Image (tube, rainbow, N blue to C red):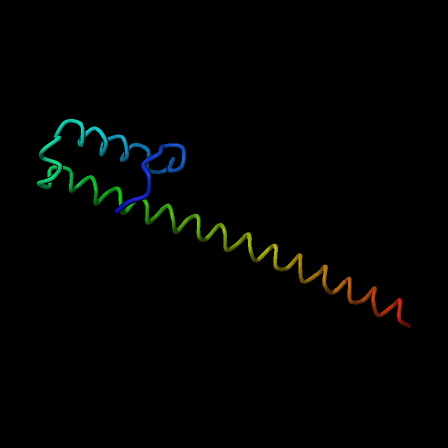
Length: 85
C-alpha cells in the first residue's frame, strides 16, 4: 500500500507518480496482473528515500528546538534563583 498519490505532497516522486498513474490508465486489466509492478517498486523506493530525507530534516530541527528549550529552562531557573536570593 502506498500513501495518496498527490503530486504536491511528493515533489521528489512526481515523475514516477505520473508514470504509475498513466500505466494504470493504459492497462486497466493488466495492472492486476503485474503490468505496472516495476513502476510500483520504483515508487516505493522513491517514497522511502523521501521519507528518510524528511525524517533527517525533522530530527535536525528537533535538536535545535530541544537546545532552545534547554536554554530557556536554564535561563528561567537562573532568574528564579536570583529572585529567591
